[in-house]
Image (cartoon, rainbow, N blue to C red; front, side, top):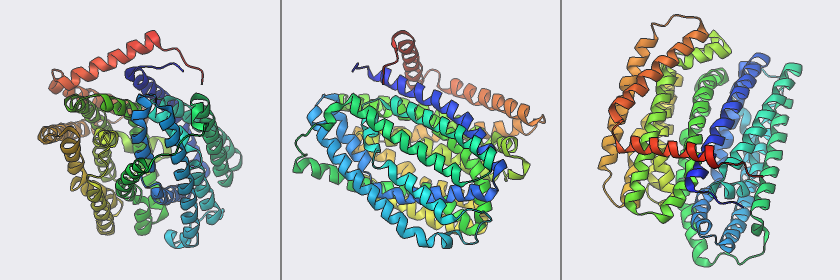
Length: 517
């Protein structure tokens, strides 16, 4: 199999991720529009609630993927096939156990589903059957995904991501057709389940073909290696649990205070912000394996220089996204779903704040995981989750949906927003994090000023809804990117992003020839 440079792999991963995601997003939005028009708002609430419940159950993964992914970076860089095979056998056993545990936990929760929902939604389908379909969809992936993780760690996520988008695009087209013909929810979920199973089987087959040695019998990991992985799993466990509790409990609490209808309305906004975040994440996900490879071979100073450049890119993209969420998300909801689905401006503001804060953690978490400093900050993440739940319950009671969403931002601000980068600097780069925090404050102030200025410029736009969205996007984009260029065009980070981007484009245009899968 042909080997490529880190830059080429990153470029392939990023371009495949973005290209596939754009197509998939368009089809997904059409599917969502058909869903809203063919089924009631309460179906949106059911979708959001069950997705969040099963995300919480997935905490049983306990960081195994991150720990073994870190363990794979060096043997893959050194072409140690025996060690890779041994790690994959360990990975397989771990994920088989995890899938079984999640399935058992999901079934144990089954009798309490009606209590969690409260007032029964006005839908014709059985809630228990719907929940079991969601549970099966979650569990089945664990019996296959470990091989896809090998491709991603080997800097070939373009294969995993590309096939994923082909699957979800075709799946959405079938779901659209089915909903238009029947207006039924069961078949919609069954199509999703079949697509998920086929995708996992194909990824498993591709990994076996590219790395046939993973099927060979080899020596097991020794006691020291197992102990190291187990320690990293233990250290990642609390971070994994707290991350899920912070990011995936909002819908549950919103449903508790405001009902499924409010959850459905909010999900239209979170779909938009989630879509935008996932699109931007394609850029950083495509870099992660290359960052791990770079860290294995580089000094602390070189690692920090690359980190600061990626962190600047975080600010640029997620700051731009946050301004867009505040200025145009409500217009997009009106355009796609109708005026009755629009919510107060405080909802986009809270979502923009969360999007920006999470996005600014991308470089931090990429380096924390690829440098293997899992144990530092694990208890701080626990306090993030605990504080989020307490604040969500208090603020949700008095301020409704906005209170629940704003609580997530407040809990992050007081905990891992500052402590995680501190850990990366102290235990990864072995130096002070003062320069990072100076940059963070500067980035935040610029983002807030651009957001306020863009919002007040955009409120004077009074055009038909489609034109309004387009004009507002042009205004906020010109303003934000103009300010970024004005402040940073002479900085080293700007130069690195510019030069790396040009190198990627040139290499793709000159050398890329699609490989056979």
